[in-house]
Image 1: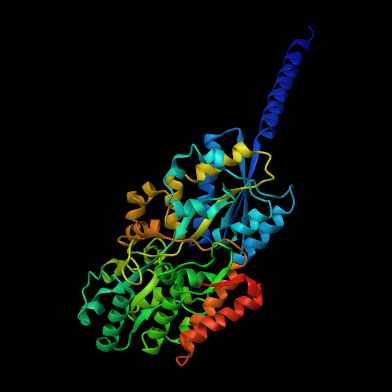
Image 2: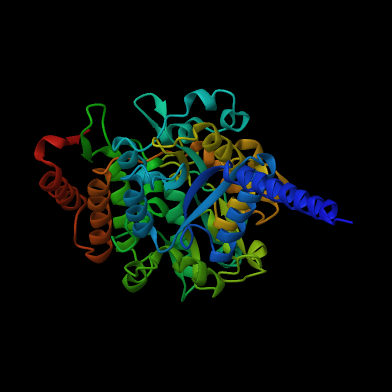
Amino acid sequence: MPKTGPRRLALALLASCAFIATGYRAQAQTKTIVTLAYGSEYVFDTNDFAKKWYDNVKAAFEKKYPDAEVKLVPIPGGYPDIINKLSLLYRSRSTAPDVAQLPTPALGQFQSSGWLLPMDDQLATAGWWKEFPDAIKAEGQFDGKVYAVSTGENDSQLYYNKAMFKQAGLPDDWQPKTWDDILTAARAIKAKVPGVVPLWLNVGTSSGDNGLLQGTGNLLNGSSDATIQDANGKWVVDSKGLREVLTFVKTMYNEGLGDSLSDLFSPSAVTVPLALFQKGKLAIAVGSNYYGGNWTKTICSPCWAEAPQTIGVVAIPTVQGAAPGAATTLGGWDLAIGAATTHKDYAWKLLDVMEEQQNQIDAANWAGFVPAAQSYTKAASFVDFAPPYNAVSAQVLPFGKLTPAKAEYEVWSHALQQATGNLAQHTDMTVDQAIDAMKSYVSNQLGADQIATR
């Protein structure tokens, strides 16, 4: 009896299996690939947190959209490495990411190069976008269109040592209303608490634009005139606000209220206060929102379980106490869709997943941010991550002011950094001399017709 029947059945089964396998491969090959570029070693507090966050985003997106797949494009290195690599990627349509994480100060150069896609139509129906403060909505807006949206902000507050305040006869629930209140407290600390730094304020050029954002930029935003670039596009190098800031810096360092020049001019100056506070060597600091998170067991940089009981936090006041009564800089990271994307819908869907509440709160806690959406800042998972610090940073966020997202800003910023550093280093320098030096530098770099006095 011939055995062709079973053999034919076997062949048929094999053919069927092959067809099914081919079908699965074809199905897999038709998945839409969405590329996502990001800084893998700089933005988050640890590389492990960065990997965890982006892996979570990828998994959430692919679960929600099974016909699409996220291809992660991690960029190692520091801030300049991220900018340089993204610039290279965007120059070719074949390598340009569909979605990318960009630093706020660099948005202007990427948008002006034609590399970013406006998102106004999609944002019109995004619930989280409606909760962004106007200043934060504006950070990715150019020529009336929105090209990038915040994925976390940094703002600043005043931190102070409660025990030192008590020793100096100051209230441990300190509520300064003016800049003079800050100087008065620092003078009391100097007189009654020997061996400590009365007041930390980042000045000089060692930390670049970041130092200005975490230092004197906060004072400028609380001054009588915070204008950096006027209505004609010119860069302000002399104003009442700038003179108020420089007078504060001169007073502070002439009276010996500040830290040593070696700390101020260190490349890691912005993080110096974290260790000084823990060691009991600092009374007051103008510092960033990430301080509280850094002291938690989760971040541990450095670990300091006693911080909430030891270090108080309040808003930075305006110069004379005028409304809104609080001042801060804003600076953070944004998400943008590439203009070269062939998957605009999926790129938007990925961005939308990244902006979901838990993802944004995780990013805030793991990278030292404040979420832009106001309801997110009230969530227990954010507020209770680093109490009382996260709650205060959320309260001052709506009062923040942005720096111009233009390449020329770096010139203006460097000039102000030089002016403040010189006043700290040379106590015989006058405010007029500091202003003149600022005028000269910006004029030489950008042209005499590009500066303004107010």
